[in-house]
Length: 452
Image (tube, rainbow, N blue to C red; front, top):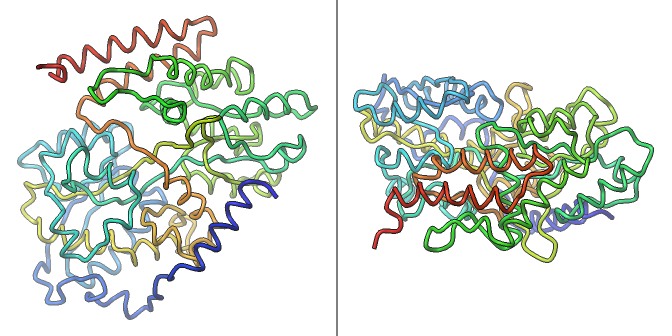
């Protein structure tokens, strides 16, 4: 029995021993009391504007559709969702959040971007308490991403993504290998596939420069090897012995020929496409991409789609990045109370569960949930072949990136270093990381981290 199946059986036992979320009938869905909403409709006629990217993506689209149909009927509040491209969303988010006259009331933000807009967001601690939400229903990684380095809740976890191994079960079975439990196992599997007569790349990695995507798996290897970006005094340490070893392992996949040479320029979705099109046997990326593999038009891919936790470090830790989209309310909104009513419905466990169980339309079909109670729900797992159980296991040890405003300044240095090392097989890893550490330290020193 392979690792992912053993894990799934264990998680299934845990799930069925847990108390399942109560079933919700159609009448409850339209009852304001179910969501703690004010049935007197004090905000009837209010029009809210929600700044978000990619609103037609399935992980977001179902909430937009259900809100228009149900939330508005219960409250009289209408919500207009923005639909900015991801590439331009960060800049627009900063502009709108800092604009005292912005027309937006609610914003969605990626964890790394939140640190730059915290001062413009309405604290949600009282909201969480008054709504009766269980904050421990979110993983530590998601809690941290929503609060930064403080105890203030700046955004409610909305959509979250653990890193998963996506793999072809038939290919690994053909070479007699189990799914990799460590990053080093990937190299062993790569060697076995290369020694076979199969015309398929062992793994599709992504080392290109594209919104820091080439750092996602590098972080996991740094943490697993026992190091980090910074020490407790904010001194860069990713260039220490463990950091060099982690980076060597990370770029070895392309240097050893297990990931195609073109992967030095690929972004996450381009690498995933290699798996979906049958040209690669493994891929490590966000779990929302699982449906791409299971829905592949190539039968050999769809019929052999399998998933397991992202690998850990041999003899070290198994930990990866838990990436979060949070949703918050702008403090300068003229309709803040109405916006908080919307958050009650939008982030309610019943709403989240219904969204992840909605298979009525492929455009609304998503496996993405953030609440641990929803991830442990038997019906949810049955609908998605246990994928939420695997995600829950990953999130138990997941971490988040350094939640400081300077993070967005240092990311380009880190991403460029990884791309340089992956692209130039002769690059001196220690030298490149040392130079990058100096660049990062300059940013931190200018920000006053070493004063006194």
